[in-house]
Length: 125
Image 1 (cartoon, rainbow, N blue to C red):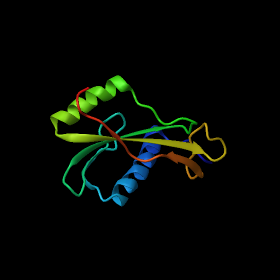
Image 2: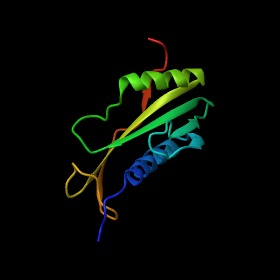
Image 3: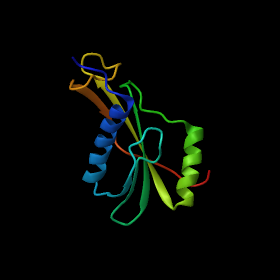
Image 4: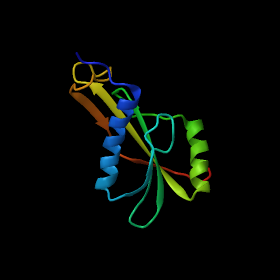
């Protein structure tokens, strides 16, 4: 019998998608944090040794791009400025192949919505 994936398992699935994208773009990982509600999920550097904090947010598949809390993100961008880092946001939609509005069960095929990494400006407005 198949069971629902836990929030942590869904989050880990999204992190795998983003991690592979970062690897394909030749980022080097400094730290990885897969705990729920702990940010950033990835700290990495590019080939020019520029540091990036990567935020991964997972949700159900939708017609719209994944959004983030703008007020919270301003606080996080301030944290990045203090640490001389840039911020990348990665929204990942995951849905069951049977019903894209719900998350898949364990060992069930799934649909993926991932539009890549989004660079967020950390400069003061």
